[in-house]
Image (cartoon, rainbow, N blue to C red; front, side, top):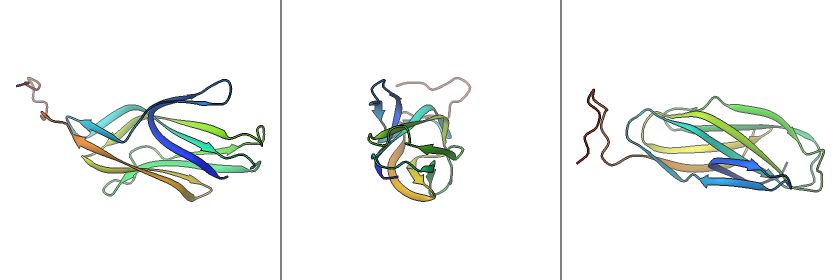
Length: 139
């Protein structure tokens, strides 16, 4: 399959006409405490027309110090029902865990070959505190 694009975002949905509605692409995140858990996100992939074979799609999010921030996602996909149209897939992610601030990468692979890598930054938010029993005091 030939990849048209891959985007890491807050969410997305496939419209009735086959188009994609993508919410808030992610280029950076911030958190007050770590490890930080991002409750919901999505990886949106779109493939160019012309391929009718079945392939294995894999998605991972990792960093230099922790290989996987999510359980690695793998699925069999094909475009046999729409050989002349681009095909979109939305991979919904739950509880993406970031151990510490730094650079992370979303990788999209087809049949074991990495076709897309998107980097993003997770930052320590200003005013962060370790959440003592009384909570954070704002100044």
